[in-house]
Amino acid sequence: MGLSVERLSKSYGTVRAVADVTLGVPPDSTLALLGPSGCGKSTLLKLVAGLERPDEGRVLVSGRDVTDLPPQRRDLGMVFQDFALFPHLSVADNVAFGLVERRWPAERRRARVAEMLKLVGLEGLGGRRVTELSGGQQQRVALARAMAPEPGLLLLDEPLSNLDEALRAELREEVARLLASQGAEAVYVTHDQVEAFAIADTVAVMRAGRIVQVGTAHDLLTSPADAWTARFLGHDNVWEGAEARRVAAAAGLPAAPTADGALLLRMEEVRLTTPEAGAGGGAQAGPARAAPGARGVVGGALREGLAWRLRLDVPAWGATVTWRGHERELGGAPAVGAEYELLVPAGAWLSLPAAREP
Image 1 (cartoon, rainbow, N blue to C red):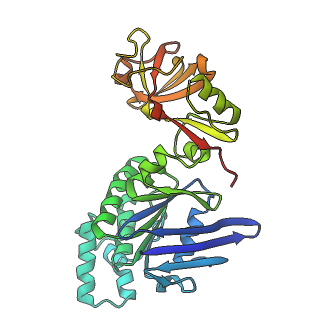
Image 2 (cartoon, one colour; image 1 turned 30 degrees about the horizontal axis):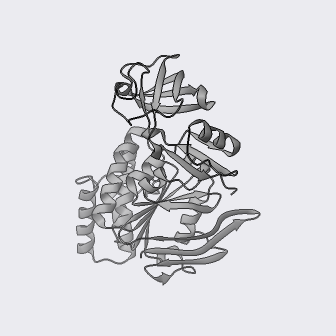
Image 3 (tube, rainbow, N blue to C red; image 1 turned 120 degrees about the vertical axis):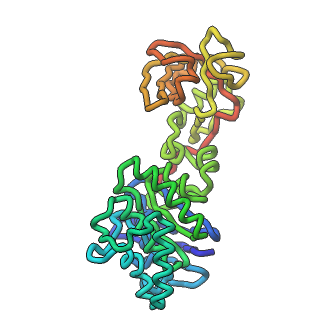
C-alpha cells in the first residue's frame, strides 16, 4: 500500500482540523478526499506531505514511517491548484527539476522529460517559457513535473480549481488517463464530486475533520452513510425525523425510519408518466406501478441545458420533491401546473441515519 495514515489529528488552537483519521490508498489506485471547503481535506494532505506536523498519529508511505521526515524525503510528487511552476525556467527545465534534485544522469533525464511531455500532450514545447502557455498547458506541465521522478505517491490539491469549466472537464479526463497509464498511487483533494468520481477509484467523504464514508462512486451514491452525506452528494429528496416518518407512512412504505432517522428518495430511479397514460405507459417506460397517491403537480420548472429540474408538489405525501431528467422522458417541455404520476420502485426509498453532529 502506497499510503497509510493512522489516527492522524491536527488542531489549530480550538479548531480541530483533522480528527483521528485512519485511511489508506489501495495499491495502484487513486483516492479522492471529497468534502466542502473547510472540512480538513487540504490539511490532511499537508500532513501526508510533511508540510504540517500532526499532533497525533502516523503517516506511512510504502510501509515506511515518514511522520518525522521533511517533504523531500517522503518519495512524493505534488501538484497544487496554483501550478507552482518556475516562471524563469523553460517547460523542459520545469519538468526536469525533480530529476536534477535526485541527481538523475543527464541522458536519462532528457529521455524522461521527453517521455513526460509526450504523455501530457506537450511534445515539442519543451523550449518554451511556462509563462507563454495557457492555463491548461501549465497544469499539464505541473502534472508532468510531479510524475517525472516516479514517486511512490502523488498528491494533488484541487489541481483544476483555477481553470474554467470547459477546461476542467477536458483535464478531468486527461488526469484520469495519466494516473491510470502510470499506475500511480495518488491522493486527490477536491470539493467537486463530479471530479472525484471521474478521477478516483475510491472516494473518502470528509466533514469537520473526520472521514464520514469511504467507497466507490456507486457505493456512495446508492447508499450514503447519513442524511448530511446524501445531501452533500447531490440528493435533493431527504427528510428527517417526524417528517421522514410521515412521508414514509403516506407513501405506503412497509417500514418507517426510526425516531432519529431519515428517509431518502433516490429520484434517479423514479420515472414520470402522465395520469392519462397510466402506470403501463408514459413518455418512457418505467417501473410497473405508481407509489400510492404519487401524483405530482409541477410547481416549478427550470431548464438545465438539455435537461429539466422539476419541483413537484405531491399532496398525498404532504411533500415537495425534486426530479431531474431529459425532456424526452416527459414527452415534451413541462409546464407549471402539469400533473405527472411518479413511478417509484421499492428500491428508490432508503432509510438513513439522520445527519450526525460533526
